[in-house]
Length: 164
Ligand SMILES: Cc1cc2nc3c(=O)[nH]c(=O)nc-3n(C[C@H](O)[C@H](O)[C@H](O)COP(=O)(O)O)c2cc1C
Image (cartoon, rainbow, N blue to C red; front, side):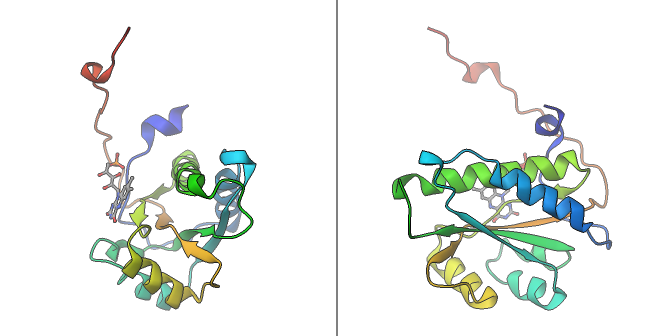
């Protein structure tokens, strides 16, 4: 899959909006992810309001990149009606990776900004987005058209492969 090999974290974006169809495609990709017992613990906020994007940039010292992004996707995890609550973190990570890969496929860029498991960041995002009590923000994922194409570093390392 080409998107896997061309994806790289993008933190600076052109000042143009992301088409609604592309945002929908990205969310479709997220919801296509596997999950434990097919429990699909996710809900997604799509934020394009510049004022809220600015507020989200203060979630942590590592989240300033939401400020100049045209859109930020906020995957949130349900805390009720779960089959395997102990697997939700893995489920959410799977969905988040699909977001990054579909963005790359659509010639967009994005970056995963950690929210969970940091209580202070989670509470801040819950407050800004007025997220209901049964939902918990997992990450912030700014998406947009990259300012420039980044050369992807080659992380392949044969020393990490072990054969028995
Ligand atoms: C769990 C996780 C948390 C991350 N948190 C942040 C973050 O808070 N801020 C940020 O700028 N990048 C964050 N990143 C992006 C990483 O810095 C990036 O994936 C890593 O440097 C490798 O670069 P690449 O994505 O271009 O391959 C995070 C990535 C992961 C998987």
